[in-house]
Length: 108
Image (cartoon, rainbow, N blue to C red):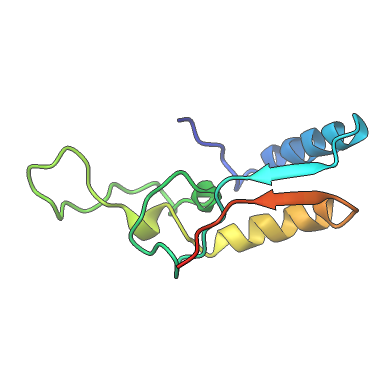
């Protein structure tokens, strides 16, 4: 899956413009997959909106499982502080008007 560079203000504006476009077409809201607080899935690397912030420089994950094709990357790509900033901006730019949200998350 390709990533979007959420640090780029032009990208964020394009996403917000697209959201406004759908609202102007009559959409009542958006579904956000998957907003998952870290406390619920601290070791999971599922497809989450939490992936919208990456560590500066996109470093490789450290080798902690020698011989495995992939390595856990945890805080390098998920649940980073910037996620809140991006979602807060989305709220201010789009969602603060009467917009319905369906948010998928996990429970204990």
